[in-house]
Length: 512
Image (tube, rainbow, N blue to C red; front, side):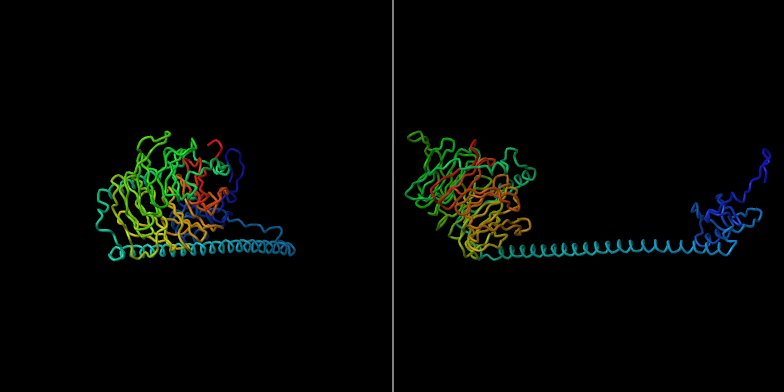
């Protein structure tokens, strides 16, 4: 075909390319969508799919229009005009086939490896899921058993012996306890450690900055210590000499001596908001003290406000409730009691007939609704204070429980026993999450108010740990007798310890 302007000829056959084979069609047809195909190829495609291979739109054989073109005979390739050429052509095709086969084998091997890895990961995921399901079912079973145990204990009236002559914890008091618990729990979730909290490096540099013997030398031994929560210069100690001593850290002198108990003072406490001191004794009494003016030599004088006789044997531990109006004591007579500080009245005295061993320690949970106790038979029990029911029991120690302490976040409980170990329990799962074995018996345990540090009196040493793994921070060896008690000062700026060597020691930096 020639054009009118130039008279040049164009071969339209060479310009038409099949959209399927990309070659010049021998029998071209055009679809209604404007695409050119080899007739036999497009008919086979339509018979298989019923769509246009280019546009994917529906297409039938009737939609194809033949194109009238001159039949051309394709010349044979030069290489195919001789036997050596044909052999070379066949050899090239064979080589291409072998290369393609090799590539396909490589791809197959790669796919096999990917499939093997995917199957391995799937198998591992199935094992993890099975383990988690098993742990979940076990946790549900333990929860059901715990609930069933609690219900059975509530149903068995013979196991719980509560003194009916006492007034009990009224509905109004229970409401007060619940409100304070909810408020503290809610606020604790947003609470961050104070910026002034001592760091690990600070504590490692602490030295013994004060060493005083505030009690009588005739009856050596100091059993307990407390630091005023808002006036950290005031320290209260209780000794074997049957007295409690109010000591001023700033002046290094005794402020007052509280006499009245007939046996050793086993625990002492400051009231956080009022001028009230609380002492517990092996004589089975709890005393509250208030200021009585200034005595001779300018020293403050204190008088007994209430003497509370709730136990028939030694009081081994006391703990102040978060409401600050109530106090709990635990005794060797196998009972624990709930007291009203202001009225000096015991509200509840609880004895569980299933507990055959004496109490050795007790502490309230930071929220105030749970009480933790340790006994001589190596059990730690958690009590519902409002219902006076044992709601959980932790086993794992060997020997007498020596002390316990709740962390400030309310999730963890640290316990120690005569087996020379410290155990950390998660109260949410009721499981032991870490055990630290030591070379000496731990006699005293206490968390600081941030919950970051745990101090332990081990033998004649003071040790400080941090974190859920109880990582060691520092150890001090200056005491000559058994360390009986330990308390943290405000923001862990100093630490106070008492010992059977008759000394009160303070540990901190020289600037503090």
